[in-house]
Length: 357
Image (cartoon, rainbow, N blue to C red; front, top):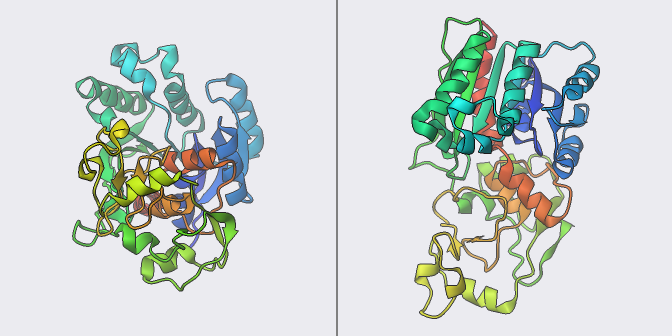
């Protein structure tokens, strides 16, 4: 799962709990510093990236750069990665790119300009590709081109890279002073070979008789190669604790078949939640839907409960030794906001081929 180390230093902005960093680490990169303004996520990041600098800071504030300089201790940054929030563009459009509401995206551009890395990677929601008929995407490319980067972008699906989840992200890759455009990695999986929910999490305890605990034990050996990769050398199970659902909720979930939703419920049952995603079970023979930050509308393909943090983390390809800190809600948010590690790794390995030239 981990490649041999290389000499490329990475700065992760808007790092969250560290999905992008973990993927680049798996590919052999040296993660130097993670920066974020979410304290619970940053605590998880620090716990799982020991030896890496961590900064709680607002990237739109000038003093944050002074702190970054101090923590870098003169290290050259080769790659900057991150997923800056893009909500402002929905309100301002491309003609008001410099609006205050876009300050965090502007901070990403400023950071790349300041440290002039060999490459950068930005990931965001796929809707940005068509926002204002693509004008926002084009303006982002224009801004980075202006400071010397050859920018490529593409919508990628995580399931194509061994992630048991249908999760699409718009990814920008910029190469400094390059006449060569980045070519995104070819898929390693097809719809016929996608990793399924059952393949991803079937070895984890059912928690049917109790809600479990934050620290527990595995009850069986891994059943396939994916599960073996996720476990690695880990022999203690973390973050596998179920929601203590009320009985009527469990009874309602029990009426939903594998891969079904509220439309499969008898008339008069569960009608308080009859929107598109409500009462949806994962399909055992397919990757999961996109993991969100609430984890309350999707249910285990077999057991009558929401997925645990560990199950959702598996579906995001976080290895089992990656431990999430904070309360349950904070952990759910950390997992849901993360970039799947295996997708990040695939991009990082492809990028290394360009950096080595």
